Amino acid sequence: MTRHLLEIDDLNSQEIEIVLNCAENPANSSLQGKGAALLFEKPSNRTRNSMEMAVVQLGGHPVTIRPDEVGLGKRESTGDIARTLSCYHAVIGARVFDHGTIKELAEYATVPVINMLSDASHPLQALADLLTIRQEFGKLTGLELAYIGDSNNVARSLAIASGLVGINFRIASPNGYEFADTDTERILQTGINLVQTDDPDVAIEGADVVYTDVWTSMGQESERDDRLQDFSDFSVTSELLKKASKKSIFLHCLPAHPGEEATREVLDGQSSRIWKQAENRMHTARGLLMFLLNEGIE
Image (cartoon, rainbow, N blue to C red; front, side, top):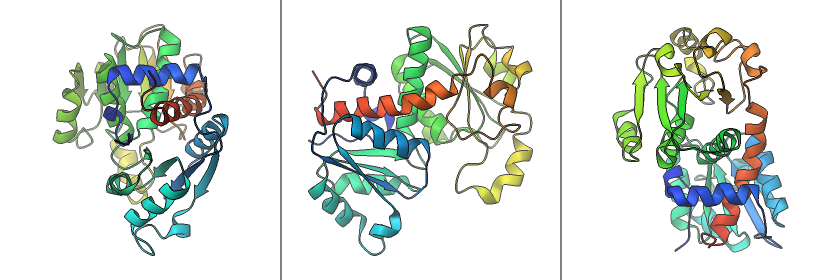
């Protein structure tokens, strides 16, 4: 059966460890002479560059495709596009608005499909986050992670990933921006120690890792003014960061809006690992490709 990565919990804890190890120790050419179709409904800086370079490093040829080039679900059905791309490529990656699109691609594709982002999840980002944290602390289990901001797709994937590897997860969001009940249930199924609060001070106290994301994601532009008001007390400042562990690191999946979700002082500060985190998007993409194309890598 073809392996896909649509959600981070399509991997178990042992498989996540294999992917992270492959990310740091590339040892084969899984894509030598093969293609990788990278379909983008939403533009991206890190996703496109990290995925293209990961494919190249494994000996493959990335083909980046805009939605207007294939008429996703309009000029041609999503299923037929998946079948067509499977004829030419060893793997399909897609960055989409609706999670249903990535599920439909996987239903009809005969090669692995990777979710490069959807409205429901961002598993590639979660893998890069875990690698960055492991590189810093030498472990994952038992660490305390504080997420300050919207309970969005990034937070959801990171919370599930944290539960799978034994990280304790605390999230501070304004009322009305917490995880949906169905998301909370899925996160708790990992056995995670989850704390949800509307107080950033409670979430960040003694945390090893402090994480945030933009308050207004792509597709939410009409909500920007309301969100700026609702999240005004959730900015990660140097003063707030002092409440975390003295050895804490700060992460942000980028792009950042300095002065909103985090100050420029925090983004550029000594605790910040945002550029290592961005670099790790490439390494973990490469590790994931190795894992999927070698059916788990014994």
